[in-house]
Image 1 (cartoon, each protein chain N blue to C red):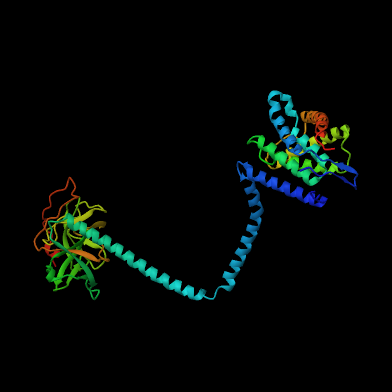
Image 2: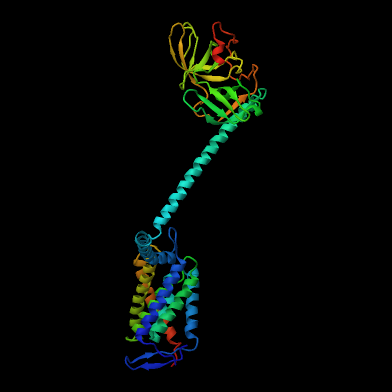
Length: 175
Length: 300
């Protein structure tokens, strides 16, 4: 799936290639962690590992089409694991757009620096949360707060965790 | 190597994927009052076109019917008018048959309740040729056992008596005729007096002394003294009482509808008959001949 490795001449930014099955394994692992961690660590519910994976591969692949498709699949899998109260498409729509945005931004900016990753992850987390609230309000008629302190804290925590997770995921790249 | 889509293609793909998922969401979401969201959206999107189409089609149809499709309207109106007339006639016939059935049922019921009295039903087929006499003609005559001076009644009351009998027809002088009369009495006070006609719709009860108390609304029944009609048949109802010299002037409304006779019963006996008395009051006195009452008035 990710056997392509090339240099985009117009932006001079690398498009990274990953080991075979790396994206799939990382995605499944993120979903498993997301589903199992909060059982043992309630605070882990703040984290959104599928979102971090979506952002990371979007920034790394730098292809909007593959980024949005990957976001869609991850989101739909997350919807599927979220029980009957979450309709299929809630996370799917949000992560599709985040995957597209991450890929688009990743094609223009150098996102390898930890500070950039921190800032982008925080911003994408907020955007992701905004998309979910928007979907809930418009389609599900469920009044949700647009943002509060807990979400702000979650954005910071996810951004911090993302810095370290992205370093781990960097190891899956092919040289 | 997979070809990298252009940015434009990516946006199209993004839009497609988002729309796909929104539709997927809409299929799943069910709002309590409006059903599934996809249905709400679909109906909301389609209904304006349906409404516009319906209005347009309705306008076109109305215009066509009212202005262009009137070629056969006159002919259809004539057909409908003819059909309407035929239906009116049919309704009138059915109403007449229903009324006839009711009358015949009443006659049959009357006959069954007076099974011991020989009688035969007859249909009124004509009336008198002039105004000199109030008379009707029946479709039954001598061959059916009808003889002169036999009484004719309906379940409502006395009609008159047979004045002529022919093999297949007979003539009945109505009670309202000037020459007609019947032996009668007041049902409550049992005061007797002949009741005769005056050539008008109302009857007159004669020979009732001024001293006797008679009240309007009192029923008048046959007394049986004329030897034509059995006792206790309804004759009429007292409507007006005036003092006279030497007798009261009492007007009586006939019990039978003598102006609209269609079926009657002819009492097939020339001997005095006794009818079942179902309404005799408890304080009723036995009837007795009243001195001075002129029987010939009831026997033309």
